[in-house]
Amino acid sequence: MLDLALSRKDATSVRADAVALFCAEGSKHPDGVPAGALRRALARAMAAEGFTGKEGEALVWHAPDGSAAGRYLVLGTGKARDADLETVRKLFAALARRLERSARHLAAPLPAAKGAGEAERLQAAAEGLLLGGYRWDAWLSRNEGSARKPRLSRATLLASPVKANKEALSRAQVACRATLLARELVCEAPSTLTPREMERRARKVARAHGLTIKVLDEKAAARKGMGCFLGVARGSDEPPRLIHLTYKPARKPKGRVKRVALVGKGITFDSGGLSLKPSTSMETMKCDMAGSAAVLATMSALKPLRCPVEVHGILMMTENMPSGRAYKPGDILRSMSGKSVEVLNTDAEGRLVLADGLEYARRLKPDRMVDLATLTGACVVALGNQCTGVMGFDDGAVEEILAAARATGEKMWRLPLFKEYRTLLDSKVADIKHVGSRWGGAITAGLFLGDFAGRDIPWVHLDIAGPAFAEEDQPLARVGGTGHPVRTLLRYLDSVG
Ligand code: BES
Ligand code: MN
Ligand code: ZN
Image (cartoon, rainbow, N blue to C red; front, side, top):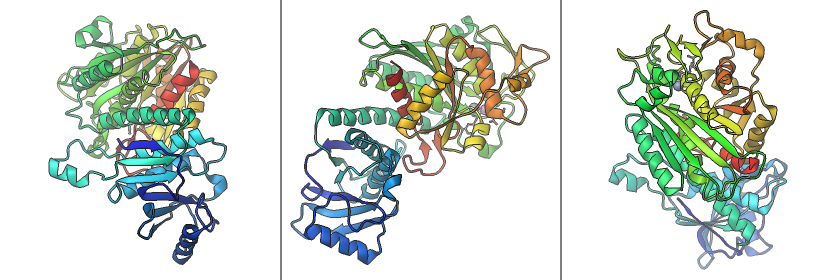
């Protein structure tokens, strides 16, 4: 990860290979450059190039010998009144990418963002650099790997090293390190990252970050009566795992919320099972464990962030494969909660593993339950590929998550759990069937989970099928796992305590 430092210097005196400057639309020179030779030279270059300050615009100006900086990179920030913290994240992500080959040391002032203080802008800048610059390279051979290795290794942010700023910087570093862990897990090839490999990695995280860990294998899950989880797992040669991590804060939680359970969908590869997916839909289905990756990554950051509440992370790990032993359309499974479930389409496996995961979580008696799942294509149709669908019966609990998401810039939008749609899941042969009709698929999936979450413990369902995986480069994440919504979860856990 890029080394980050703070400095009291300003953009004209800081020493670096490249210094970034920001210029709003309609401005004749970049912000924070005092009147003088440098400002005149930059204004001349900008006028000559027709630089207008629009978002995405960039201009490089090579400084004469003897200057503190080798070159200045002026970035357009768009209209000043539109600039918010997400603008800052994107600007710094663009910087990290632009300079990764051509500079070792970058320095940059903090651009303005409406309504945001210095510490917040600093945190956003750090997040932009760390997230935007990340590239998953675990499988590149030594030659390829070093050819593509970024030279950029250090960034100095121009903000004074007072306590609030130092804390904001270290929060950003911890949250981003966790986000990158989630990305790495999602990116890893599905035959490498099996449920057992996830167990190995979870044990490593537990050891390094002060968590306790308990793992249920097939036999232990059977003893608990997890017929839905094991039904899905049956078609695979890879044994399933339920991984349960626990974080306990140093001091007894005193707030309204004392204990939170996070449940992650961990399908390490979703072939669809006997209701086999078409091959192109399968190409990205290593991403189907992104919920569990986000939970594990979140758990890894709780101790360094001194999270005030007790957190349980439950990862429901299995493959969904077709085979002679696979579960079948028409099967009826007995869930851990005792409810029987009629299976119609074996590609709707996520809600089955979560049904048992939620019952397991309920028995821990948490004050809140949050599940995370790449659950439905329907949610991506509804909200697009950058936005999580948020569902739940408890308005307060839903709002707590939405508020955290607004603060981190991760897009989330609530979908309704209309009780009228619950009849779509009525079964003639079992207590419930697991798929509804063609329409409103994200909602009926949410309603199915709602029957297992219950009404007594406030529960929130996050359908992350869209934003968990980037099929094309995005401002803050290159192709692959995005680590969404780790930053939101961390913020949420900090805010409810
Ligand atoms: N893992 C998929 C959902 C998904 C789709 C995730 C696209 C990421 C991107 C899930 O298991 C699934 O296959 N859902 C089905 C449900 C249907 C059979 C009721 C779907 O969305 O088509
Ligand atoms: Mn599926
Ligand atoms: Zn799936």
